[in-house]
Length: 189
Image (cartoon, rainbow, N blue to C red; front, side, top):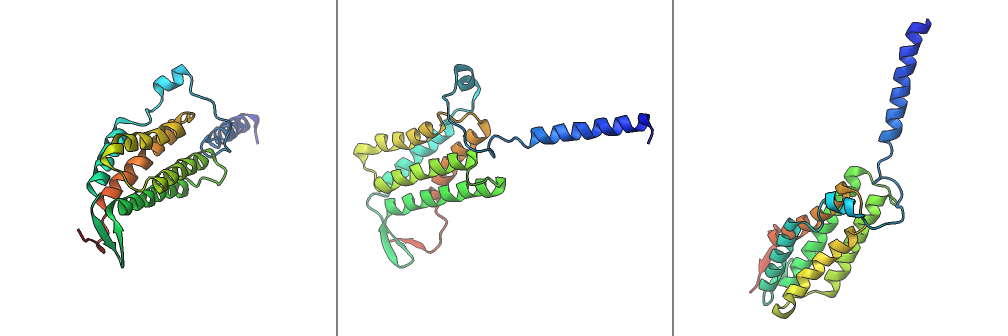
């Protein structure tokens, strides 16, 4: 092979190799690194978490839960309180969205994104397990605690894609919980 034809081929191979090395370093796929708070510049340009949409959905879900206070639902063969049913829905749909992100992106067990999504889900699971019902007296505190969990879990997240996913996990789960498309569920009163 002549030197004139060999050099362009070599240059193209080098460009491809360098491009592959950069593309393979997705922060969300890498192992989790020690978290540091966002600096002032990062905080100004980062996707806001919790977003205004999250706040609206959380307030709507809190009011929806409050409206379920004296209602009972028959789910298959068991009777449960309305608030318990929709709390279970919220956790179910949050797990669905978390799992969808993990599977669709092929996040490994120790990847940064999977660890962050798992932590967020586990914190909500603990919250909803401890706070099965909501009353008029604690309505504002209940909503604020839901917001605080998201805020706390995203405080050190530097990746906007992951911040968006975390916002969406909360929005999707609460909206779907309120829709409850299960046709086997019947309201008793």
